[in-house]
Figure 1 (spheres, helix red, strand yellow):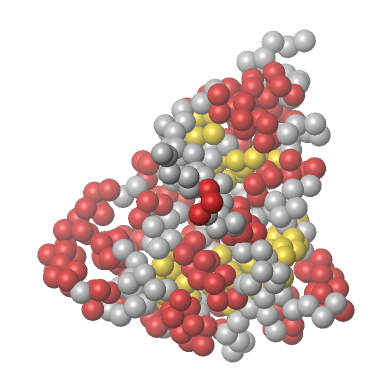
Figure 2 (cartoon, rainbow, N blue to C red):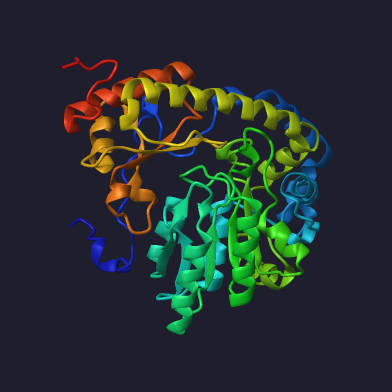
Length: 411
């Protein structure tokens, strides 16, 4: 008699995952990075050096550094955070996590119960939206413009919530290279957001995972930096090495004051994140991070330019977007009548992977149904051009958009 699983499952269990599919020919989905920029030789050398020097500490949980993570990596992060984000932190303000998503899961475990209100950018990271939905949180999307979350909209929302006796559990924002829009919130807006949070008394969760990838190398200080300057400990800062070094390493970090950190640490009952990755990254980043980052930014800029040019050639004015200031994504709006969820399904049959806009929207209104997120970091320039040409053909066949493309017969 076959075993029947369904009666034993929790009622909130998500739908089963599909089997792993081969890597698509034209992969514009996910957050994959540039293979040619992965510093393989330097990482190998770092591994040899650190294992020869400290390999025996693998016999202990935590590498003799305690539950916050490998101390040399946290020391590297102290310097990196001060240099790039303006955050003055100590090593014990930093928790190493298994990717930044573990940091977000810890934050949710600390703050969010079913029915709790969380403020979030209206179009935002799909992983943050899906996690909060699974927890039964009430998500309120704050409208955005080309400079990120609109402060007047946030203020209006807070006033309405206050009238109803509701205080948000936290506000989640990606202020630097926002995912998916790629916007960079200016300094004045960061200060205004922080002032609202301090006045209303709710924490801010600042996701800074893409901030290292501003093409110019110039970025505003992190909201966490401004909060620390003001003597306020209500900002939790999330970061990652996934976009600056390699996603598969699964090393992220969280920065918080001890009152919050001590409670998050009590929730992180996994005996520590992966030790080998932490050791290698600490060794590599101490001497190579700045040079590697400059090289990676330049490579990503070339690919971003190639994607912008390919969209302009194949879609013309049918594809609306703002050229990215950095990062690995382009957020594209197609004409009314195009459903990008359907487009993604059809494109997959032609070997094209992309992310439909509804996956990145809190409320999935009509405008998000015609949006798509394209990741340009992984495919080569030639593959970008060929993939967008193929995508234009698929889109034209199903939706008549674009009216003309480089490979569609002109009528």
